Length: 337
Picture 1 (cartoon, helix red, strand yellow):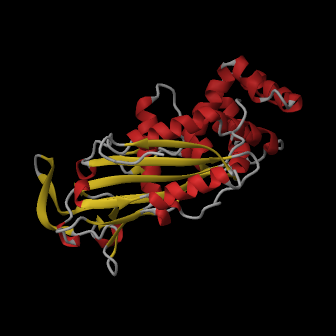
Picture 2 (cartoon, helix red, strand yellow; picture 1 turned 90 degrees about the horizontal axis):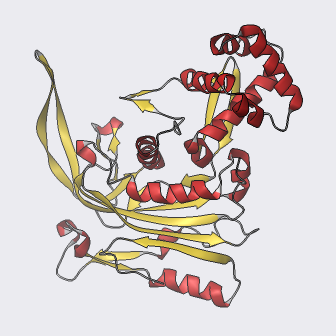
Picture 3 (cartoon, helix red, strand yellow; picture 1 turned 180 degrees about the vertical axis):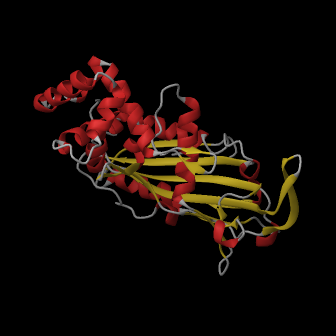
């Protein structure tokens, strides 16, 4: 595996949602998640991770997503791990790589392969409750999952096979996102979805008029040692979080576009959270002549990030916690450092 990252980061991600449902709440008829007291639109971190996982799956020929979905159902964890074992059994080089630091475990697995002849037999053996060397085979499975699946290196996961459980804390984490503007919902209209020739389902189509959503996130170097998150993985994450949201093909998720990604990369040894939630340095309000209820597009809002600029400038002349700034903006987002 490539070496894990050594620098922690905090990042701010902002995107807009126009006449769509950014994140339906299943407990509220799938209406957009809202804090109704403040008219704030909410989006869970799970929704963003789902965007990214779908993007990674679609844009990679290799199987890189462990936490996967088929339709509305999760793909079996066992089926994922079983496929990994099959590839390992059939590829001597991959097996050697998996156990390059554990010759005894390699010896045990080679004996199992020699005895069972095929991947199906190996799988049955290592998941049998009577198998005595469980700590060895699950170290293999854990290593392979970490090696193969980019989403685990990013976000972590928990899995259980044959009574064994293994959990990884992901080095990349996000808070729930919230809108910087007060959000108005579009009155729902009835919709009909035709399922086949003789049946159909009825539902409501709930959407927001306009929502400018902000997320605060972290990339934690100590946690990256556990999952193996490497520099190339972080580069892939930056690309995925920017491109995944507008790439969503579903009807309710159309018209969502990234506006800003700003990542503060700290010097080695500097921990996350040096400046708190980066959304606290963003000020927004409707432009003159526009009320909260009338906000319908990005240009209807005034956005002030001067406090964030000041924060970064002060570090350069003071404590020097920051190694570099990664910045990407949309064409209509006027911000530079």
